[in-house]
Image 1: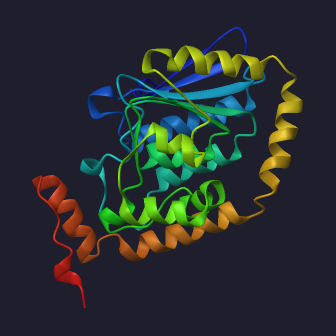
Image 2: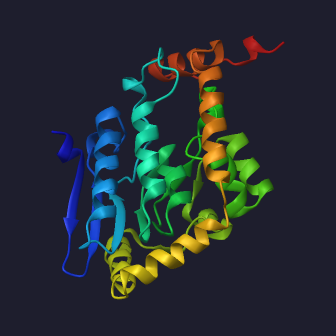
Amino acid sequence: MVDSLVLRDLDADGVLTLTMNRPARRNAFNSDAFLALRDAFADANTDPAVAVALLTGAGDDFSSGLDLSAIDMNQDAPPPFELMMDAICAFDKPFVCAAKGCAIGFGATVLFHADVVYLGQSAKLRFPFASLGLVTEAAAAYLGPANIGYKQAAEILFTAEFFGAGKALEYGIATRVYPDEQLLPEALQKAREMAQWPVDSLVEIKRIMKAMHGDKVGLARKLEMEGFGKLIGSPANIEAFSAFMQRRPPDFKQFRR
């Protein structure tokens, strides 16, 4: 069952396509899905047949992020999520994302970890953390400003607004934007162009580029986990989740001092 949550398809060129496979839930993640993606990245990192990993989503959406109906409010932090992020951060080969439809929460933050991002024209991104009474995840508080500039990152993180593929391209989150029907074929073609070269060369180039971040990604993840521990289960967070489940607007003004 867990294996079916992330489909794996390795082609003859060394491109491993990983497909998040919960289309009925817009590829939202529960604990099993996080662990399935962790295993996929960990296995790919040690598999000499894999040169490039390409992450995409089944159906019309990339990922709607965390499955809020499956969250444990009594848990200080989501260990399966952090284990998955450990594997993604440790993945030392080229990592490509091909995303269309909704890319929310993890579906958006993972784009900062990809080396190359291709979006379909239907892509709608959102970093919803403020609207949930929580903090960012996956080092987005660092990688956002580092990738697109502080003020642009502050706007999309503080407003928790949706924005489209055009804005993502303008900000530099996306490398290219394609019509939805061309997205996966074009992304696969680009991934194969990368995979034709020696993997050791690709790994070294990525290692040096990533070294410029130093330990800032790790520090951001640590601070985010601390912030998550402070805010999960807070009155505002409970109100956000209750409003989501009850399909109503949240009322945060009641908590202002």
